[in-house]
Image 1 (cartoon, rainbow, N blue to C red):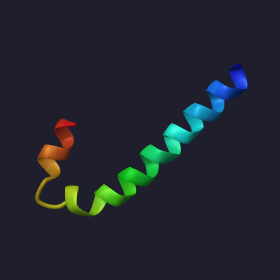
Image 2 (spheres, helix red, strand yellow):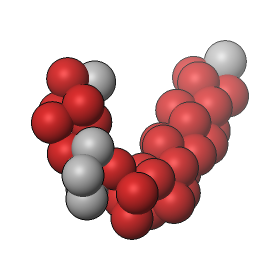
Image 3 (tube, one colour):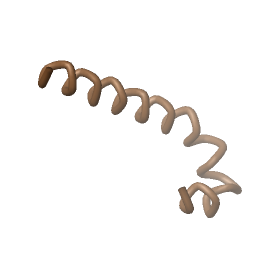
Image 4 (tube, rainbow, N blue to C red):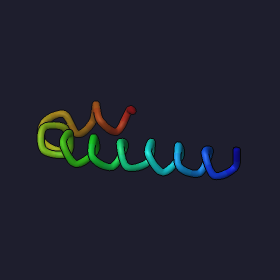
Length: 38
């Protein structure tokens, strides 16, 4: 059960990293203030 939780957390972390890299382009431009509110 512990190993499953670690794998799930790692999977969610990698998803967050990839999503951040994808959204970094549009959101770091003119919508930087809106992105900071997240």
